[in-house]
Image 1 (cartoon, rainbow, N blue to C red):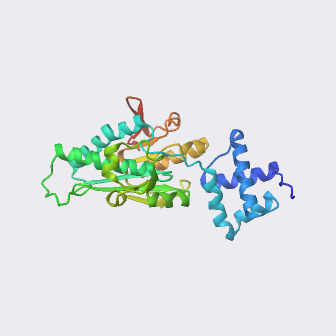
Image 2: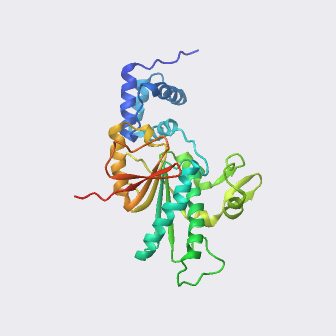
Image 3: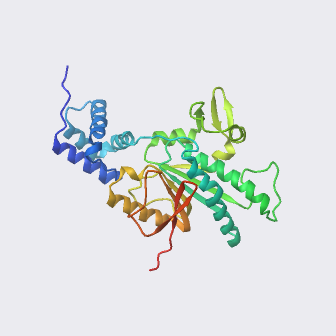
Length: 298
């Protein structure tokens, strides 16, 4: 039986640097073990005999697919519908309402939301359900002089809603695009939401076509500059924790540039922008938190 190759300190440093350079993920001492474990798996899969030869593969032209597979293996795609309820309530009841009101006054009927690190789609679909709900309710109280077509569309005209869902992992993007979930994955989705936004297919639940059309899944690496622009809200939860402080600062700056004025950023509840930036102010309601973009005086 062949012995498992040993990962030397030098090889580890090379691979750590490569991962950091490619996607900004930083593996400090506490997380080295996790990185080693994932590297070991990929090495075995590629049937290579040393970590250095694996590194050579990753930096070669034909190693691009393997590199994306490795990065995919380094993220923990943990997600659920309506995750962190306090935060979702803050979005649904306060942030969304405020944005709709502000936009209607300006006669700008577009709403753009970006779910960065969307995993298998539960977050962007949750946001789509909440926006459809919020708009219907808002419309009742602020009717516009437009004829409502029949059957009633999910998004009342003249409003246009676009939700971009991005991730670094192609396999989770495919699952999100498919939009089919098991009973276990649906545990946080109440009956009225299931009725309105899902079709029951055997023992699974499929996102209805009209809701699906609002969400666009796209590959994005947060390390690059080509990111979705002009967003009213960005959700990027439990992603920043993979980055070291300089990379977090750069990311927060990017989010600031990707948001419309007075736009909102939601990060994971264990993450904070405190000490990272002056460009956002914290908004806090009933234990839900978000950050609002501050207009920087040049």
